[in-house]
Image (cartoon, rainbow, N blue to C red; front, top):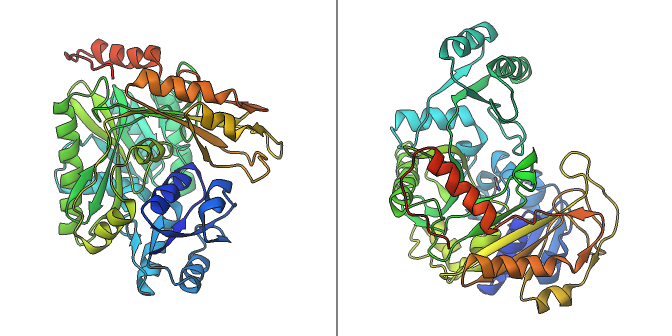
Amino acid sequence: MRVLLVGGGGREHAIGEALVKGGAELYVVSKHKNPGLARIAKEYGLAKETDVSKVVEFAKKWAVDFAFIGPEAPLEAGIVNALEEEGIPAVGPTKEAARLETNKAWAREFMERNKIPGRKMFKVFDDVEEMKAWIDSYGKPVVVKPLGLTGGKGVKVVGYQLRDNEEAKAYAEQLIRKDGKVLIEERTDGVEFTFQVFSDGEKVYPMPLAQDYPHAYEGDVGPITGGMGSYSCPNHLLPFVTKEDWEKALETLQRTVEAMKKEGYPYKGILYGQFMLSRDGPVIIEYNARFGDPEAINVLAILDDNLVEIAQGIIDGNLRSARFENKATVVKYIAPEGYPVNPVRGVKVEVNEKAVAREGAKLIFASIDENYTLLGSRALAIVGVGDNIEEAEKIAQSAIKHIRGPIFYRRDVGTRGSIEKRIQIMRELGKDFEPNIC
Ligand code: GLY
């Protein structure tokens, strides 16, 4: 089976490894050569992932059987539509179905008209004065969102990136002047979690829940990044997410896939629900139309099924299983000093790959070249898998010392202290539950 993988980050390295393990002959297109993927790919093409015609050209030249799309930007650019027009099926939603991620106002309106559980109050404005008057009359803290993709940097929340509703109005005004529209939502308090599912357009197969650490620095402070690390638990829940919460969140994703089919945009690929666990249950903060990065690395490390068969099931509409081992995983990303605001670039780091492997950890390559030169974004990820979270965290942590240079990472990813903090947040919100320290 000849498979084209689009994208060259840590998420795609994990996808590529799982495809090769499943028997694929791998072909990759991305804008930089990921050294981990280069080692396992039959051929590697360099092109921007959003350069749809170039990617299609590579797919035809290599006569691939299907494509697997990693990031969201090529989905927005219509890469799945373009490949399908050439008779090349793909794992990933069409441009229209990807609007769940690429048009946040469309996604909210879709949830509303289909009465999908996990909704929240929202308004879309194109008029500055109306927006200001509404925020004044609403009175409670709001979230301000650009409608389109911003790489996680556009969403601002009162109490976090915005001091108060006055700052929210000023930011929303900027967005209306720049984009013509803005999305305003009620703020939901709680703890965020990631729920990824495979969907063949009808059926949904859940993956283990994961928790991402989006802030740059320990203690959940500093700028928002793509994610500095993540963990998952052996029972596939999270310490503060009960089975009942999980069932409600799964229902949200199932109902989403059903409604997408009903509206004529069958959703085929990976659907990622970014949920906020509020006192009243899980609420959708955002949909993503792809695997999470780093969360893909967690779940694919314990996939107990063949990803090539899963991909074929998604494409053919007859997905039959997606099993995962009952293991804990911890992923710690290593980023250049200064990331994400002013990252060091062009500097080499020392990576002792053999020593990392001796610790029992796995190395994932991202924004780094084959000479270990930093390219400016998250560079490497270290993955620990264990029978419990403590063991998985220790494995990842002990391997990090074998990487040296102008880099940083979050020591607290997957630690007991950071997990207790999230349990405490839920307790303070009044949630009555028995935490499962995994
Ligand atoms: N880790 C967050 C994301 O992939 O969107």
